[in-house]
Length: 194
Ligand code: GDP
Image (tube, helix red, strand yellow):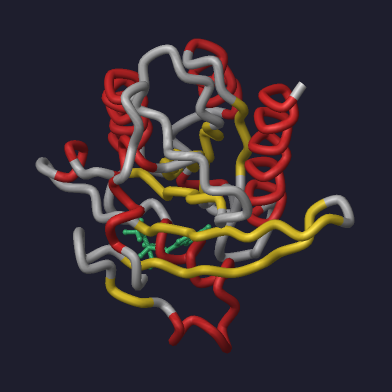
């Protein structure tokens, strides 16, 4: 995107500077191969996926789009990150407004990785009510399941976040995850305004 300055601008409390009307920054986090790119492509829509730009700062994919949730438009900047040993320190741990934390139900290591990322996120965002949804992707691969639904739910309960199982391949529950994050962002915004 054009104004890379705004990406890292935070005030003294670590919150974003107030930028009324700016898009919500939603960050996709998770181990490699869990389906982040597949999520981003569904979000972008096949036709617009060429609009994704390489973020100058991290080399990650960024897509900006307006979607409608509960009859109200919401502008979202979706950031598809690369997981690596170094990327947890990436600025998106500080600057996302909300996070979709993905693992694959067919890969226990990715489930454990999601926990690690959640802990790192908490370190970067202490005492902040940042919306996070734990997403168990690839639920179409029933026979290769390594992580049960109840384990996913239990993990989300420990981490005090919402949980959903999805299949990007079947386009199942992917939009529900995006809509869920917008609803949480709105609740947070409304409680701030109240
Ligand atoms: P990323 O590394 O997290 O960005 O993962 P990708 O989106 O590149 O997905 C890794 C592989 O898993 C690709 O071959 C995808 O086609 C496949 N994949 C992603 N989501 C699903 C899903 O829900 N079901 C199945 N069966 N395959 C998926």
